[in-house]
Amino acid sequence: MSEFSVDGEPVRFVEGQTVAAALVATGRVAWRTTRTGRRPRGVFCGIGVCFDCLVAVDGVPGQRACLVPARAGMAVTTGEGDDD
Amino acid sequence: MTEPADLVVVGAGPAGMAAAVTALAGGLRVALVDSGTTVGGQFWRHPPEHARAAIPTDDLHHRLREHRALCGALSAGREAGRLDARLAHHVWSAVHEDGGFAVHAVDRRTPPRERTVVLRAPRLLVATGAYDRQLPFPGWDLPGVLTVGGLQALLKGGGVVAGSRVALGGTGPFLLPVAAALAARGAEVVAVCEAAHPGAWLRHPGALLRNPGKWAEGAGYAAALARHRVRVRPRTAIVAAEGDDRVTSVRIAALAADGSPRPGTERRAAVDAVGVGWGFVPQLDLLLPFGCRLTETADGNAVVAVDDGRRTSVPGLYAAGETCGVGGAALALAEGRLAAESVLADSGAASVLGPARRAGVRAAVARGRAFARALALAHPVPPAWSSWLTDETVVCRCEEVSAGTVRAARADDDARDHRQVKHLTRAGMGWCQGRMCGPAVHCLAAGEGAYTPAERLVATPLTLGALADLDDRPSAATDTGGTDKECS
Image (cartoon, rainbow over all chains, first blue to last red; front, top):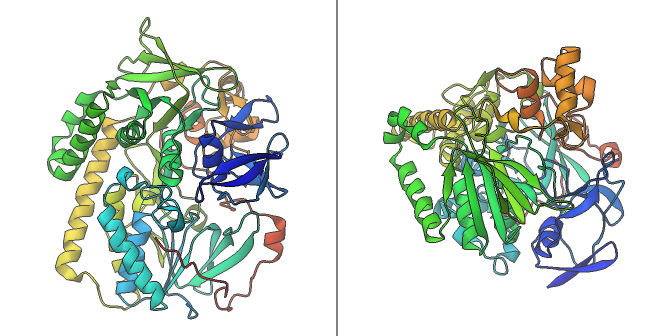
């Protein structure tokens, strides 16, 4: 298993999984907060259509976790602001 | 491939693969573009090739023999220098240019890096598939509630089971393979809530009799579900999901004939994941800006109108699979072949199938379309589905617009379609551009008629930086960057 980081914390993943799949495999289903209602969101459609699972990858915001393949050493940041 | 292509195929699911392989067999040079990291689309979604030993998923698939044959043919086409396979390329626009087509894509093979690519050819085939149709219900925005397709994508693409106690709900046969796959991977499927009445199929005996393969497929799922003791509950629906930060339970109700919950039938089931889907919405984003003639299918979707060779009303533009109406993988394969045959004929190239086999494929398409129609009529969106909504229920997930706000736009401001509702309430104006809430807002506002998605001039968001690098020289050869080695 390899590792990438989510908000500085290590997440182990199987090579070939997306960031979303790796997070769900660890039991995490939410990693973003909505702008208006401050509600938690994570993966919903899983195929890049709904944009609920947005994260920042290596500092670049607006990335769909369900589409981005996890890569060892990748720095994923989550939380607020990703949907602005 | 250094020569310009004769055909660009967008979408490498069953339809696009079959089309590309047929066009290659006919001697054409083909560019095949897909946003996925492998070919196969949603139906044959796989982990990347290098990861398949670590993430085995073959047991979750159907028709793998055809998949392998198509992959083999694509690999041969690439080795012969006639296939330009562009995986992890997201097409954001397709336009007319110099009598042909220019397909603008973003290369996202190494995210977050983005690079623009333009693929040009005299002919374009759009086989972009479909995604799950959603109907909002209280709590559907809670983490742990996914689309049925999302649950399956995690399974087939990453070997990940999204929960240990899962409830599925909605309508249509797609619920069954996902329930079977979840159970096969150790999840407890606590309920499969199918809104339709099983007897609805009896009104379409002809479509069933002419498609015996579908019987076998259905029997296979029934056996798998029985083995895992999973019960399909007809005429029920998940009418609410509950929990604080993630879903912890669902409320399930028996449905009256119009789809409204029967009073006194509600019960609660503890779950940690939910999958919902009400059929599919065809992905028409690249087709609508061309002004192709549209038509309606029995499932309530507007789809692109095609002739019996899968030609759209725009010369040089073809469609196959779900963009012509939701119908499943077998139909998509046949339509892909048929569309490529038309491309060959219109390019002055010889037929690959020959007249007899082409007639056979045409007949299979007609049978498949009749089955799809029967399926849509047997698994309708329940007319009274909106009775599950409270005024507080989120309808537009992106902009967090509630059912009450959408209803007020209709009642107070006389909004009669999803475009008017969007202008008044921002529903459909967020990141997903109405892909999730569009059909529901259409139902709430218009109440009838087929759902035609809003025209989206940019089909996938891209950075201004990537746009600034855009290669817009009309006569330039296609981009010289690396073609994907991985094709299966």
